[in-house]
Amino acid sequence: MRILTLSLLVAAVVLNLDALAADKKIVLIAGVPSHGPGEHEHRAGCLLLKAGLDQVPGVTSLVYSNGWPDSPEAFAGVAAIVVYSDGGDGHPLLQGDHLKTIGALMDQGVGLACIHYAVEPTKEKGETEFLDWIGGAFEINWSVNPHWLADFKVLPHHPITRGVKPFKIEDEWYFNMRFRDGMKGVTPILTAIPTSSTTNRADSTHNGNPVVRQLVARGEPQHMAWASERAGGGRGFGFTGAHFHRNWSDDNFRKLALNAILWVAKVEVPADGVQSQVTPEQMKLNLDNKGTRK
Picture 1 (cartoon, rainbow, N blue to C red):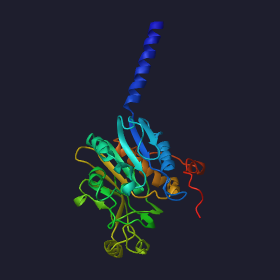
Picture 2: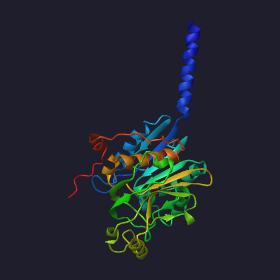
Picture 3: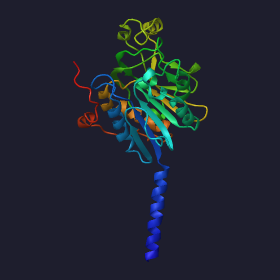
Picture 4: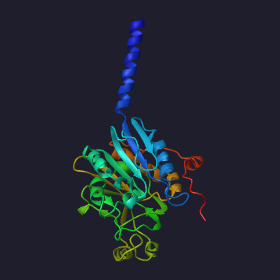
């Protein structure tokens, strides 16, 4: 009897270890503190997403704060990487030889999701890779970053939109993004028609340009979130919202992001999407110490 009991215990341990080994590992890179209170709350936002992901069976998620992980083992066995950070020259993927490191992971089929400012590399460094890895990117003097109320009236049939209802929300929604030629392998996820208020600013690298003014005047729909697939089998996702931390409390906004992270990790998205709840108290947790806005 003791031998049988011991055998059963060993079998149970082996099964648990196998289950743990089979978990899809998702790494979230939260950028350094940025902007004012309640804006670009990278760490707090990533931890909210982690709380939602951790409710999904077969998923393990890790958050690394303040940019690129210090641990050399951070990406070992990773299924997907999520970057929520500032972009441009300060983008964590553009520092040192990080593009090379991420490129090697992309070649292995690892998924990549970039949130808000993290969809902006520089044209000289990173744009070519971002078009390959996630299908689109913010390009200065072409794309724009106004604050406006986007009305997402129709959602496509895609695993990322499971359980997500059409919604309307104010954010710094970038648009006129630079996409792969012919949108090859790219599926628009969030599409809306920019309001006239988006052209109220003077032309500059991010504020406006003649092309944007014309497309807004014509009422052309614009894509603010998209999914992509790579020739090698990897998946990517770009999400231009999440300037305001408060928007993570919106169930549809949050569910779409969580669904997308699962999708890029090649985890089956539940039929009704990822179920998660966020309380007002949780929204106040893990905020960066930025002082008080004047």
